[in-house]
Image 1 (cartoon, helix red, strand yellow):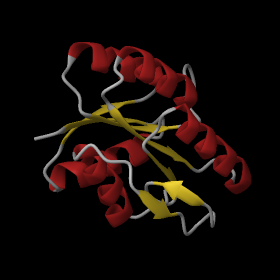
Image 2 (spheres, helix red, strand yellow):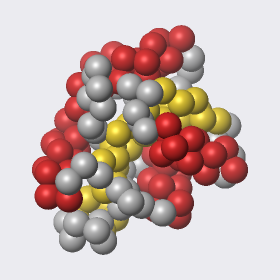
Image 3 (cartoon, rainbow, N blue to C red):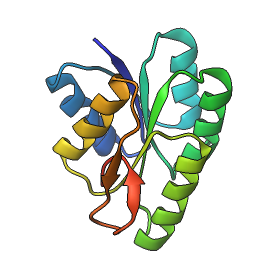
Image 4 (cartoon, one colour):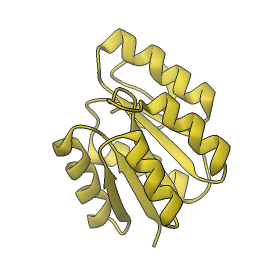
Length: 141
């Protein structure tokens, strides 16, 4: 069973993603910000990280950078929904910084699972982001 750390400051989003993952055969651990997520990565074996971009204390771009430096084998799905236009820019940055998939919120369970399953198999496939109209790695969030 693959372990996924879900990092999002919105408790409802974090819990919904975690529940979806658990119902589909993944182990999920929640974290409310990037620092908390890094702490979990340092103390648990983790395969995949799903991280929001806009969070207090440590944002998703800082978190992606830290993961790439300390745990380069962990696959990352970056998610964001703070302002449609701005979100696209930050998701593109996340991709350039090492996220395997990016999703613009809101995304559905099938899109999330496609990205996470691809990461679980070591891939970084391309999926069309229907909300932003950009070609993006991963799901539409």
